[in-house]
Length: 183
Ligand SMILES: Nc1nc2c(ncn2[C@@H]2O[C@H](COP(=O)(O)OP(=O)(O)OP(=O)(O)O)[C@@H](O)[C@H]2O)c(=O)[nH]1
Ligand SMILES: [Mg+2]
Image 1 (tube, rainbow, N blue to C red):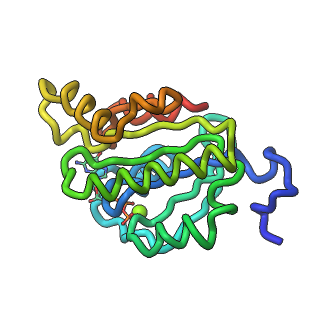
Image 2: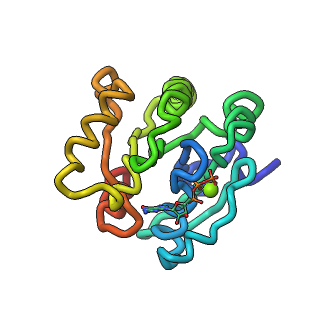
């Protein structure tokens, strides 16, 4: 039985954060920079995440159990199908990451977002949910509001009032704000 077992109380397995999104959107970078204090430039060397990585971290006086699912389609499918219950159960906060500087796969991303939301609600009905419009540093300041609106429209977020959209960047304070918004 792993330490992630359902039978264990929250204090033991930690508060579970689930990060999902397509490949190279910045999920591991967010986790490393915020929780492990990695230098931002080092994130450029991060390898692609294989399957789903689970790590325990102490942050801000809490223990977090962070699930980082590699964004390659095969890893996403494994998480959504074979590992569904273990991935989507006991989630305290769900973060769906979108790279606002590269929207070419937005339709695929939207499909995974809709599926993920369904499973989060089904298996973790009290989870907080955030869409992170990430790499916002690559968007001109004057265009950011418009970019957020575009993402919100493309993902039909008006249909999901329980999901909050936030702009983030590993180079800006907005990321800390986004993570702290669920604590
Ligand atoms: N400009 C910019 N680049 C970022 C930001 N966050 C991450 N990156 C870069 O995006 C690239 C991919 O980051 P990863 O964190 O490995 O992406 P991932 O989503 O974990 O990718 P997979 O593991 O393949 O799913 C790296 O080169 C990071 O340096 C950001 O806020 N702004
Ligand atoms: Mg990764």
